[in-house]
Length: 249
Image (cartoon, rainbow, N blue to C red; front, side, top):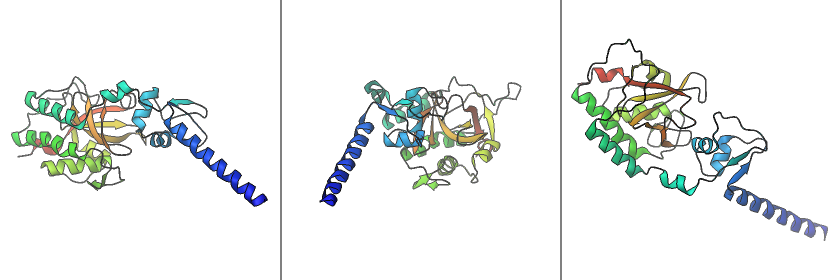
């Protein structure tokens, strides 16, 4: 009899826990518990860490127990998100108008001589990077990954540029930064670098799309982000261009 009662109580308790978990996942707010991290909370609610931080105005990865976080996107926010087709159309317009961004690169030296104009083939390579990169959206993040099965941030850049026609060695993020030159008027296909993400110093990079946006292998997948978003704007270093593009023929 005792065993039967215990079994019934255990079943009820388990059902209660599951229901509570589902209700919490569906709620607009989440209360931080001991052992939680932004990544764990974001994953539970099908968000990226960037989205979670931006929704809550967080400027660091630090969270506290009992802190309340918004975990459900407002309908207006969902509607404003760019679709892959919208981004492709935007890139097509940028190709036609050769538009640049108003972003200025902190790493660019005002006294530095102006970069020579790129050759036609180099321009073609830079424009081709967007055509190679966009179909890779949502590819999962894999540490040291360099194939469409999964990428890390430098592996993604390496794959995109080599498939766009640039002869490029496999480098890590710091190596890519050192193998490039700063630009103060970026074009789609230039690189954008960030610091102090998962480690101190230069630690992340992506490919600039224009209009303040870049495509990169984020913490979970290949995605498009805004440089001036809450998370990225304080970590932004500047724009650069691969040295190899200056000699591309």
